[in-house]
Image (cartoon, rainbow, N blue to C red; front, side, top):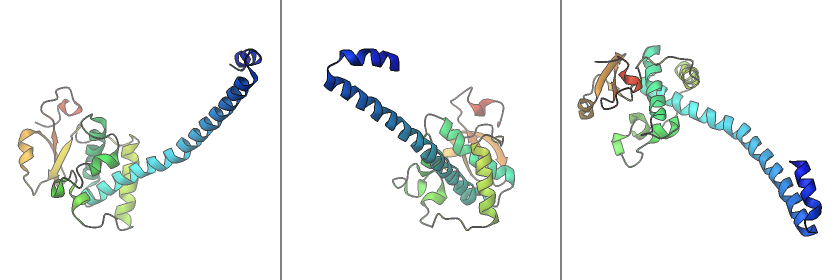
Length: 189
């Protein structure tokens, strides 16, 4: 490309040649700045998404067995992969807030309590598990479930869905209208 530019530059008027050189220099500077932004900002954004996933594990299932905590994390990532939901864990978790009131996607997010976990073993475990699930190093025990609720509540929306596995204190659900979806691989009734 440089040879092509050098061949063209001598033929251009002096002011055009200077503009082209400045544009090329600015473009390479902009590309370098974007690369740095993605390298630094991308890692920060990635950690922010893992932190959101960890907070969801912590507040929704910290006292559940490991499989139950993993299942809760996978519901968030299953939604991220589905075009009906936002494309990041943080956005999936926050969806509906504040308009949904107490009907947020995840109750801890809109229950008016502080959303900062106590630093300790449960939080460290949630962070480690979120990292594993986010990076694809932990299998999905739900078979692609998109919804769940605790076994001590009976939300009306459950009747419209296909029940999947019970894991710990949660019951997981799949979309009955989407044959061939991950949840339709024989998991659940």
